Image (tube, rainbow, N blue to C red; front, side, top):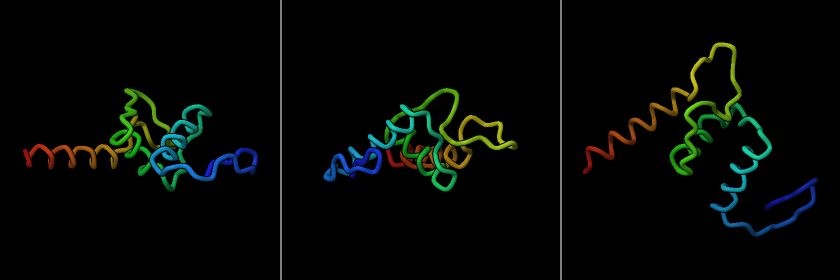
Length: 88
């Protein structure tokens, strides 16, 4: 479902298209990912949608974080690529 100003504009959007629209909205409107979903959304962004900025992230920064990419996301990507390499 796509709504603008609480009015439904389109109510039958395929799931994959909805994800594309969601990610596009985060970038067009320069919105940070919600903290609770930040790792999951960053993983989807980098692995499934191939949005891999060299610097920066849509995850809101904390005072203790100096990394450009969430370490958990990097670890998961590395483990997945290692597993794919072993299967070949």
